[in-house]
Length: 246
Image (tube, rainbow, N blue to C red; front, side, top):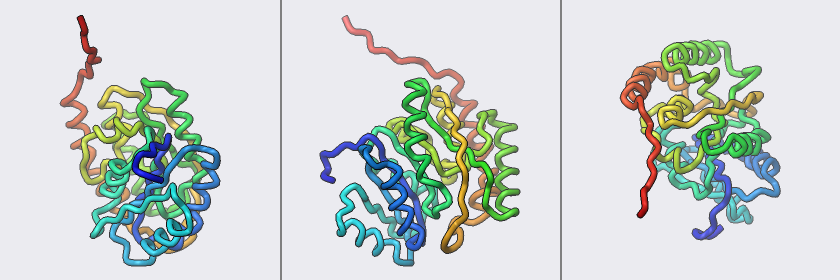
């Protein structure tokens, strides 16, 4: 894929030390999006395993739609998502985790749901059913989600799901902070756009263990809640701007 190519959809996958999972996950992404105009942007967040080598081999083998963005050091999942969003060439970005727990079959469903919803919708957010995480991770996630909904009223049951489709231009306008990927529905609402929800089924991780810990996924994320609450209160009116020509 050359620099002039503009795909319709950019799949952004943040990952750290996920070489074993990427080997099958990227095959599944290709199968799920067969026949569509897309690119896959994998953001390697300072991996120390064979993630870089696995991506290099795949690209050299002919995966022209695959792009490898590498952080020189680990900066966290939020930073990896952000790097992917700013590297994306597609009009719609669909994010997913690199651990294999998100099923790629939902990628086109999310992109289509966002398109069908029309220009008033800014995000199609996946909401997980039948969680496969440990009981501790499920508890921390449930606690953070319940607290978030009580304060932000964003109407989203599970904002921590990695599967989300967002208009690229809008994605780049959202205020960034470490942990922002857990608050995307609320941040999109802040910009005056609606949220579409799609139920998805989580899967078991096949290889390795989580590289973004329990605190990063749940309890620590709750501390960001009040910052997002403040941001939303500071923008109560979102006007429609129209250029007037003579």
